[in-house]
Image 1 (cartoon, helix red, strand yellow):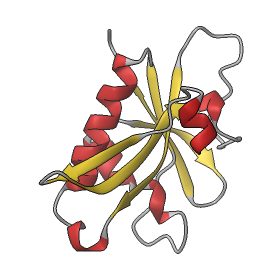
Image 2 (cartoon, rainbow, N blue to C red; image 1 turned 90 degrees about the horizontal axis):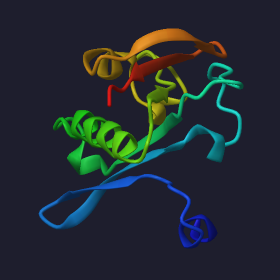
Image 3 (tube, rainbow, N blue to C red; image 1 turned 180 degrees about the vertical axis):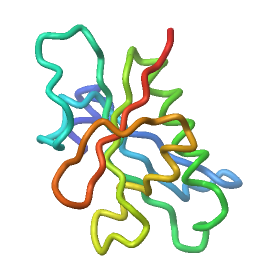
Length: 130
C-alpha cells in the first residue's frame, strides 16, 4: 500500500468525524486492482473505477456513514476522470463479502445491476455524467 501511495496510484478515501479518521473506502481505477469479476471493458474508452470495500469503525456504524462515504467516493472518482463507478455489493444476509457494501445502498445512489461476480456479489454500475 505504501508503495502505491508513494507512486501516486489512487487507493481510496478516508472519512473523518470531528477531525478523526473513522472510515475508509477503497476507490480507484479498476485496472489497479486484481480481477474483481466486473464486466470486460477492453477496447472501450470508458474510465472504470472500482469501489472494492468499506470500513467504518464499529462505534460509528449505523449512522449513515456508508452512504456519505459512497457519495464522496463517486465524487472523488468523477473528479479524477472516471466515467463509470463499478461496485460488488452483497445482499444483507450474505455470510461473506459484507465489507463490499450492500446492494440497497448502491441502488439508492443510482447504481444499476449489470451482472454477478460469483454466487454472492452483485456487479453494479453508475455512469457518471461530465
